[in-house]
Image (cartoon, rainbow, N blue to C red; front, side):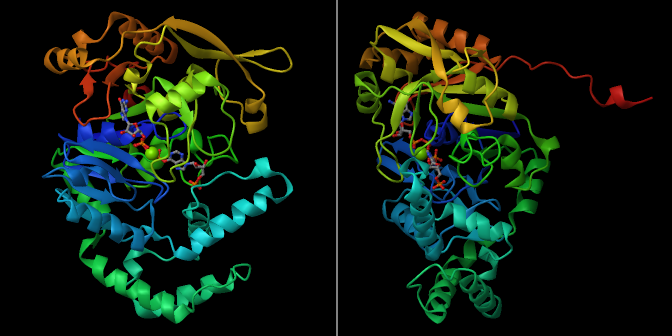
Length: 446
Ligand code: GDP
Ligand code: IMO
Ligand code: MG
């Protein structure tokens, strides 16, 4: 392993944080490449649970540098609180580096995010996206519009002032913004405190790769929330795909060695948008309760349903997944039958087994076709202990058959299984089998 990406293969909250933390044990750098405070990545340490929003999970391990990378939008005041919180608990064990190219997400972006989502819902309440209200959309819009402010610019008062004046002029719709002087003062102060952590991160990562060190790119959100390839408009504003992880970290595609897609053994979604295998009844409530499905950032109850192999196959192809991490299998332990979505029946009578309709409304009308798999036993303490001691061979045979089915349906080997929230409750199933061989560059030669 040299450069690997871990990304969300469903609608977010797949336990990316836990898988990244597991792999970070043998990484030198862990890099967040997209999103900002909308992310909530939970790791349950012996000291208790930690939720990271803007820091890479690597900061919890000695000898690892956690980079908040160039593709992020960073709310500096919240970032400072996150740092202080970890320090106070004695959990900040790695080094923290912040990219000078990362954009600054301002408190006014949070106000604008709420304003925009209310605007969307004014005509039709269902049109609200249910964003995390953390300012992501407006911050990325200002970045694309060239009105943004970057972390490396916080220490340049003249630039800061000019940029804020311009930004304010673009937002006459926002009432009660703080005076520019006041905001500029607060930003200068926080910028001064964060300055020792701010670096140009690309050469640091290039040098690490050249030395053969392991670099892990930590995805936030998920491929199905990608602004282009997700269920638009019910998406976030960044590119949480494998290609996006490279763009957002400045690592060239030729350096990439693998892409791990993280998916729960079932599925959840928080916020609005199509979710074909959603269970609104008692069984959905069961998953929510047993899986503890509440947003790590907003505390909102997550919508719950079954694993959807149409979506997972799409994500596998879109991102070139080289392996899968299937998490939260313990939540289904003791369930008699596990439904899995294998296709959709569409209103015109056609059947879809492959590919995501580009129209979210069409996906919302898809009627799932299920296959039902026999459940596996409960993950009681004895079984957990055996898995810890013996590894993957101790996984129940019914679960192994289920995992083999997921592998067949997606064409991607399952490499990791998560069977509990604790840091050590992930098991490695062995190296993934080699991917399809390509002819290589020689095929281009005359
Ligand atoms: P992320 O955003 O993808 O990092 O995921 P979140 O942290 O938002 O949500 C995952 C939740 O599931 C957290 O509460 C984790 O502590 C918990 N969790 C992670 N892996 C497992 C697992 O294998 N089993 C169980 N029961 N809980 C898990
Ligand atoms: P992690 O990294 C789950 C969802 C929001 C909303 C949509 C747009 O913890 O998996 P945004 O605030 O980004 O403009 O909201 O995207 N969303 C997430 N859902 N996990 C996340 O992050 C999410 N980040 C954004 O609920 O539907
Ligand atoms: Mg989360």
